[in-house]
Image (tube, rainbow, N blue to C red):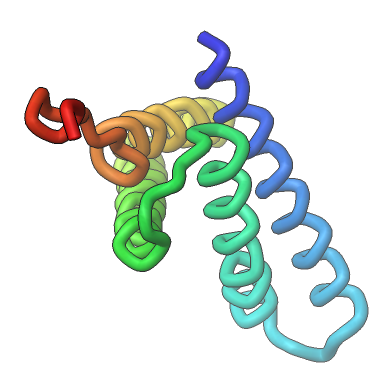
Length: 131
């Protein structure tokens, strides 16, 4: 339960960073909303990764492979959120339901992927442990 709480805190902090950067870009630059959103998201990715790596999962695995898996899980989360949005919009459900479903399902998926794939803890085998 503690790790789930740390996951939520890290996610909220990364989302706050995204929101702050997006707001600044939208209000202080002449750039399109799409470009501002993409830049803000790109800036939030390393923030989220480092928070989850150090605070949520306290990983000491090599960053190279782990960061690639983190980007993959983030892409899966984005695809899920987009799919939910498309499907529920096509079914003419209210925006509140769309927002709620995407906001619950996306972090659930990324948490499971983070535990099982991105920040998985390698178990020591008895041969490795005896060394």
